[in-house]
Length: 358
Image (tube, rainbow, N blue to C red; front, side):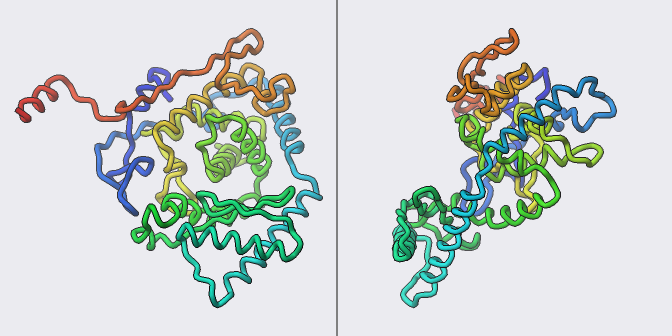
């Protein structure tokens, strides 16, 4: 975000693709028209200008990288936990294949049918002496065992979207997100073969879980943003995990997902923006939270943000004043308010509009 422009003014700029913006109310399966505003220049990224801004001291980044790796290691499941998850997933897949192959099975996306499917899967697993419960969720259903949970995501083809009924079927938005998730999983598996960013994803997902202001970001957004931070460099060499960790918050803090900012596009679906489904409130919340946490990181509090500082466990640093090396970091106020995104007219335009009405 340009230094001369406040976040409140930045929120006034609304970017449209094809005459509409995916984050706001739209027609089913299409975009709605509206006023357009010029897209702002890309936010400044020091990692793309290393030839101009040469780093002098790399010691802090080395320590930051070590702390990020250590935190990721602490969050990594044990071999026993991995084996338990893999075994449960295999059993759920087998049960799902069995249920879907029965003659009386009628697949569908009706809420009652999805709940019935989840209960049937739970029955199949109980027959194998598994203690499993099924809970309906907006994305489908959740199968929960003693120490393992498996999500069943329900989706449909995009061409079926116009036929969905809000009070009868699962939400269209959720099912389309689930549909995109199929391609996201394939992309993620291929991308992690050549990049260490999977370690960063694990750390960021844990931070998202602990900070309410980052929870509007989907898992896919976190995965792609981590990949962007590690791999999108001027020399095409992966960025160390420490600077990449800080770069994620720099990107969010500069308003990379705010209206008018140049978009990151989904590599699995050309033309689709990353984080297209964020509301204006979500955009503002994510940006302000990242700005606060970035100030904490830059003033020596990265361990607290990572979750490895025992004295800060359970404290939301984005909502409370904290002091780091003599620098007080205060939470930011909300910039987005209702109607602030509507086009602003000059007094002459308002007078003309009033004359037309009268």
